[in-house]
Every structure is written in structure tokens, then in C-alpha cells.
Amino acid sequence: MKKTLSYRDKLIELAQIYNVKEIQEYIKRRKNLTTGQLELILRKNKIIIPKDFNTSFIKENFTKPLSKASKQIDDLKEDSSKAVLKISRKISYFKEDGTRSINRFFINLWRNAGKIGLSFLEVLPKLGKTVFAFFGELFTNLFHGVYNQNISAKSARKAVIGFFMVVGAVLTIIAGVTTFKNLEEFKKNELVKKYSGTDQPKKKEVKKPEVKVKKQNKEEKKILKKPKDSIKKDVKKKDKVNELILPDLNLKTETVLSLFEDVNYDLNKVRFEKTVKPIYFTQFPKDLDEIQSVKLKKETFIKIVLPLIVAENEKILDDRNKLNKISSKKMTTDEEKQWLRQKFLEYKVKKGNINDLKLRMDIIPASIALAQAAKESGWGTSRFALEGNAIFGQWTWTGRGIEPLMKDKSQSHKILRFPILRASVKAYKNNLNTHKSYKKFREKRGELRNKNKKISGLILTKTLDNYAQTGSEYTKILAQIITQNRLMDFEPVRLANSVQKRELNL
Image (cartoon, rainbow, N blue to C red; front, side):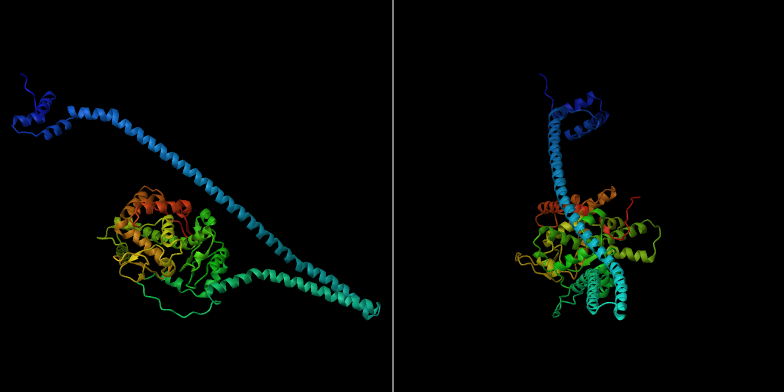
């Protein structure tokens, strides 16, 4: 009777058939190998075990083709849905741009008509001079005739009345021209008075609670101490706007909109030219929520917050450029070492790791910052944004903050308040660049940077699920805000008159 072999004996027999020397050596030395060890050695020598043959045959001929087909179907569905979304987005953009271009055409037509009218009025003084000279000579001859008694007294009376009527008409025309010329300048002066707060009644000073914030650099201090007279000059310059910081004057939304119109601040122009003027507001208008048009409210919010975000990003890029120069040197100066120590502390980098500092010292895409600011502050209308300049809803357990009205009794946090809006933007960027919860965000950004790819907000939103308690639902809302409001257009925007910097990976 034939003896039935065990599975281990079959493996040894298979090794003898294929002359596996390693197993034969172990058998000669009378060393007992386990079944797992025998399988491992056989697979290492590329010998197919019977049970592997069965599983691989099913896998190769049935499982893999089915999974591949299902994956292709899923990819086809995803590509078709993306194409439909892209087409619908283009149609909506086309409609929006069409209406804006029509409105812009009529506005320009109205302005050009006004310019033509003013030009015509400027011609009138020259015409008046000619008429005045003609009638002057005429009346001189007439009065000579009266004096010499060549005409009757009745005719002389009529001539005198006619003279004064002509003089009165000429003076009226000249006064009208002067009024039209000074009309625009008069409006500007009235607007500047509103900005400077001269027309507003004096209010009692209220002591604000002390808030611990980082010291501002020298440039920011100089800007904040800027006198009101210099602000007036900056507002009057339409074409060229240097850094304009509007102090805490409780500006109304109507005044803010007038300022934007005065300095020709238009979001379509920013999207096209990829530059924004450095106009920095220290707070939101208190009556921003009273704007009935949702579109106008959103545009006003973006106009206020965008320059602050771009300014902080450019500061980070300047620091990053300096870091790259220092890290490429063999020898560094004491001043450069001190600067590095300061940045290690600022970005919370341990053990002086340059690579970790480079990973953290980078920009936050404007699209993400605008979307999160809009979501957390209700487009600048929330209580935290209006009372404490808290755009991004950052929590605090130590500093003075604003108590949320609705929170669990177990929670002891407050919403961190800031003295100005820009301080809130700076703290937000420092939070994303240093906190351990946003490590995935920084790693994904570094991966895009190393591959010389665009740092896209839509790609990075998926890594911010730790920012809110709703997790992935929060990231979907951010992506929706970015796409619906075309915030991707603001990612390459720079400050006007600034130098564009590009980073090269050597």
C-alpha cells in the first residue's frame, strides 16, 4: 500500500526534483526545517508551489481583469463628471463676465460723455474772450458816438442795457466752467474728511483689554504711525498707491465702497493683471451685513482681506529666499546665525533642522486663506470678526478672548482676539506652518514645491480635515467656496510694484 506523503514531505520532494542545494545541505546536516522555511526557500529559488499555482491562476485570469475593468469604469465616470462640471463652470463664468463687460461698457460710455462735456465747457472761455473783445470794440465805438452826440439817447440806453446783459452772461458761463472743474476735487475732499474722521462726533475713549501679540517690525510701526495728512495724499493718488493703512475710524461700508471706487480697485482688474494695491484695513465696517446684495458683500470682503494675505505671503517668500541663500553658503556671519535662531523659534523647529524650517517656511495659497476666512467669519459679519478682528476663529485657553455664546459646559476655550486684521492673518499662517495637526498640509505643499508644481489651494484643502470638528465635510465646503467664487484666480496675485520671486530647486 502506497504511503500518503505529508505536505512537508511533498515540499522536500519538490526540492529534490529541482535540486535546491540549500535544502539538501540542511537535510545532510540533519537540521529539521519547518514548513514555512521550506516554502520560503522554494519561493526564493522561483519554484512554484502547487497551492500558489492555484491561487495565482485564479488571480491572474479572473480577479485582476475584473478589478481592472471596474477601475476603468470608475475612471470613466469620474472623467465624465469632471468634464460636465468644467463645462458648466465655463458657462457660468461666461455669463458673469458678459454681464460685467456690458455694465463696464455703459459706465465707460457715461464717463466719456462727461469728459466730452467738460472739454466743451473748457472751449467756452476762449469763445467768451473772442465775443468779449468783439463787443468791447463795438461798445467803445458806440460810446464814442454817444459822447459826440451822433446817436439818440434812446439808442444809447438800449446799448447800455445790452452791454450789461452780455457781461452777465459771460460771467455766468465762466462761473459754470469753474464749478464743473472743481466738482470732482470737491467730492474727493469730502471723502477724505470722512476717512480722517473730522465729520464724526467725538466718542468717549474706552480702554481695550490687553492682548498679547508679537512685536511688529520697524516697517509696520512706521506705517501705523502714519499721520492723517499723509493718508489724504495717498487717497488722492489714483494711479499709484503706496502702502495705505486706514486706522480704526469706525468706517461705514458706504465710505469703504467710495474709497475702492476712488482708487480704481476692481476685482476683475486684479484677476486680469494679477496685482493688488497695498490697501490695509485695520477692521471690517460695522455695517457690512447691511449690504443687501450677496455678491457685493462678498466682493467687499475679498477686497479687504486679499491685500493682507498677499502681503504676509510676500514676507514669507522674502524670508524663504534669504534662507536659501544662507543654506547654500559654507560660512555664515553672526548676523545670519542670529536670524536663523530667530526663525527656528518662530517656526518652532527643534534641533536647528534647516530642511524642517524650509518645509514650514512657505506660503498659504490665497484661495485657501480667503475660503477659510469667509467660512470662519461669515464673510466678515460674525461677532468675533467685528469685535475682535478674529477672521479665522482661532481658539485660546490662556490669552484674553471672546466668549462663544453657544458652547458645552465642558469647554473652556475662547476665540482669540487681535488688535488689527493683519495680526489675525499672520497668526493664522503661523498656525498652519507650525502646529502638528497640519503636518499633512505641509508635507503635501513641500511635495508640490519639490516637483516645481503650482501650490494649488484645491489640492491642499483635502489635508485640512483637522481644522474643524466636521473633518472631511469641512474640506468639501472649503473646495465649494473656492470654486463658486473663483478664488483660484487670486493665487498668483502680487502686491503692486513688488518684485516677483521664483524659487529654483538646485
